[in-house]
Image 1 (cartoon, helix red, strand yellow):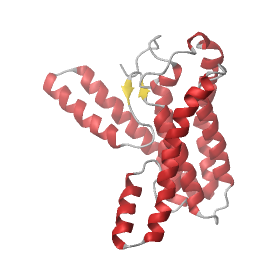
Image 2 (tube, one colour):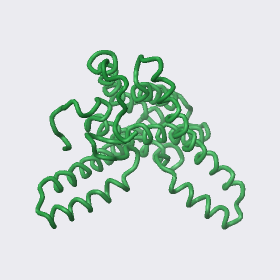
Image 3 (spheres, helix red, strand yellow):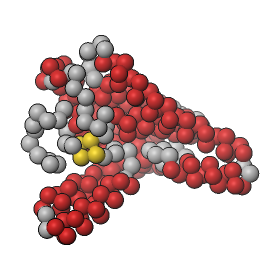
Image 4 (cartoon, helix red, strand yellow):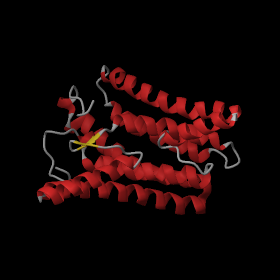
Length: 239
């Protein structure tokens, strides 16, 4: 159940608050790229496939060739995260989930250092890559399948469980619906925060995303190195 007390059933990287924080960061990334990095969203790839189809239909082959780059970056993000999860496990130091948060922090710091006059595509492709890895790595919150970089499925789940709650008069269904509403609200909050900060600090506004990421990193490091050291071989659910 969402917002339930901690049990041994889930690893720390599967806790609802961890994925809720990453949902906020996902909204932050969306606000960042749209506000100061080209006016597009890089968290998912549906729009790029639509733009690719339109470019091909218009015979705009230069645009079509460019769009292959962010699509490929998203593909590689999934490949790298899938491969790295197994590769890092053999060293038994920290989980891939934890290392990914560290990588995200490093990428965010670099993104803030990129001059505002630099081609937007640099930042866009970087966000494509890390959002793909985050989406593929963090898959469930307390057993509830979810995505932390876009909202479409959350909106669908709100409708599904709201309807089930009315039909069956089940409080659990309404609670599940509210869980997804909360995730949507956090995504929006991240976008609002990013927009305000980037309006004031331009590209360096993305650095504020480091704060929630550091909180998650500290928690996951404690779990890997101490609290869940004996559970290192257990896979997060959904993998």
